[in-house]
Amino acid sequence: MEKIKKEVEEKLRTRDYKLTPKREDVLKVLAENKGKHLSAEEIYNLVKEKSPDVGLATVYRTLELFMNFNIIQSIDFGDGRKRFEFGETLEGSHYHHHLICTECGKIIEVNEDLLEELEERVHKEYKFSISNHELKIFGLCEQCLNKRAKN
Image (cartoon, rainbow, N blue to C red):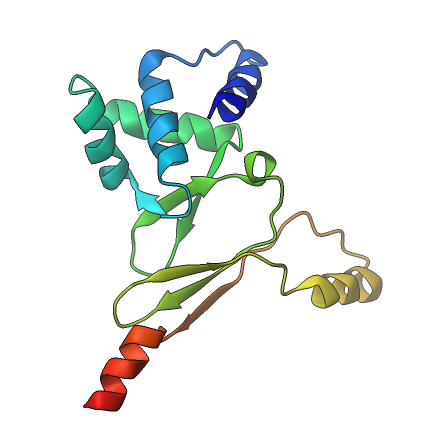
């Protein structure tokens, strides 16, 4: 957490922002729940447990600020709710994808780049320099498949 905190402080300082205690509370919740893809409301509820004086508007403003600095990114998994995860600079890589169960809503991260060959081909054939990509695959998770098999 200390490494993340220092990196965020440095990023914010570049444009005269500070990592205030309330912003740090949001950052801690994101770090403690890494990989869970929390919504703003879920983040707010977790921050509220530790810091009851934090308001929902503060959480939204902090998330927006963190997105502007590429500390976090928002993802829509097709359910109309934005969810948040650390941006590529804090994660160290953009190489992960998401499997989304259309039945139970479970989100599984695939922590490898499945699109390396496609990126190379796009670069060669279209002279296009890719800075990032996002892959979401929709289907049924193992538990939902098992439930269907039993019925």
